[in-house]
Amino acid sequence: METSSLKNLSKDQPLLSDIQTLRKRARQHIEGGAVTSGYAADRKTVIKLLNEALATEIVCVLRYKRHYFMAAGIHADPVATEFLEHANEEMLHADRIAERIVQLRGEPNFSPDGLSLRSHAEYVEGDSLKEMIKEDLVAERVAIESYREMVAYIAEKDPTTRRMLEEILASEEEHADDLASLLEGLKD
Image (cartoon, rainbow, N blue to C red):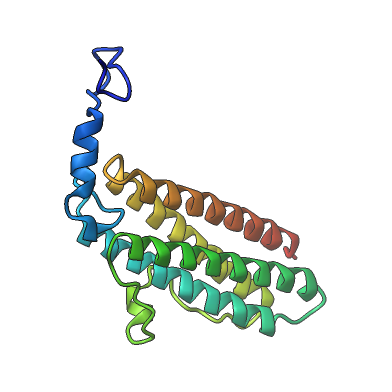
C-alpha cells in the first residue's frame, strides 16, 4: 500500500515525505504555528527586514497623506487623488507585512520612536506639487530597490514572504510609473 501522498515521478524532483512523517512533524513544536521545521530562512532576519519594510510603508503613508492635503494649484485635483490612492495602497501593504510578521511569530514594530530611522524611504514634504511628486517618486524607487533586494535575499527559503514581497513590489512599480506620468504631465 502506498504511504506517500504523491509518487516521486522524476529523479530531478525532491523526495516527498510520506503521510505519517508529515503528520508526525506537524505535531512537533505546534506553538510555532505556520513556522514549521521546513522553514529555511533565518526567521529573525526576515522579521527585521519586514519591520523595516513596515516602517517604510508607514512613512510613505504619512508622506502621501500630507501631499494629498497640501496639493494646490491648477493640476492639484487629479494629483491629490493619486496621492490618496497611493496612501491607501501603502497602508494595505503595511497591514499585509504586519500580518506576515505575526505569522512568523514576530512583533510588528509600529512605534513612532525611530520610525524614520527604520524606514528605507525618507519623509520629505516638498514645497510645490512638482516637488511632492518627485519626492514620492524617489521614495517609490527606494522601495522598489529594497523589495528587490529582500526578494533576492529570501529566494526559495520563504516562498510565502517572497510572494507577498513580489506582489508589493509590483504595486510599488505601478506607483512609480503613475508618478513618472504625473511628473511628465507637469513639464513646463
